[in-house]
Length: 297
Image (cartoon, rainbow, N blue to C red; front, side, top):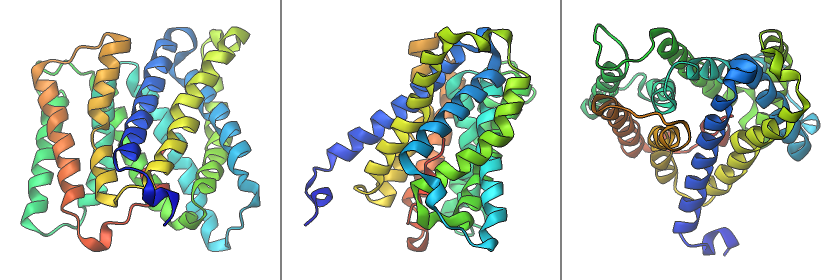
């Protein structure tokens, strides 16, 4: 029996919760720097420094990809960077919890695509209900910036492409594939972020905070999620990951003072239930969780 089999069930659950807290804490910390360096600048710093950390740890240059994997690998890196870039742009005007919930609609839509069972349509309706509560569709109660909300949904679409391309690019390489994708994303998006960054980006005093953001948002949670992934059943892992919008909302409340109204909490709850429900009722052939597709930067 391996040491992973001997570990108590609560341990990987706690590890996964810490990973989600780390990701959302890193996002909250990044948002506090928007007035200084701007969202594009933070994207460049996080993606660039995170890539350096991932490459040092996983050494992606050792990988060998077939010619058929080159295009999916490029799309994978393109989607990874686009997901980061548009998500941070959304955070400029949208509360953290709402942005994460809207971003979650991308992989949720992918999971439910082609569903024909009546129960699956319950999760679709729940997700649509959540979107109705969160998006400013002809109503004033949500008070969500339309452009920011759209950017969060675009980030979700990039996430869906990231999942599909990641599986094609070489999921058998595991963590090292993410490092290679992050390297491709950095080559594309770091120059863009630097071009549109504010002048404060070039302050040397910013480097320690930027490193902390990269560790909290990439290196630490990625390592912890990989640890939890190998010790938890796929459905348990996916269901716990569905709690991330709530974790983001709590992080926004604690670190950013973002208070959501009752309707917005209902929207978050609907999307969480749709995500958890679709995970718990997925067919056995879809139960395997791919670390490349489920864990993102």
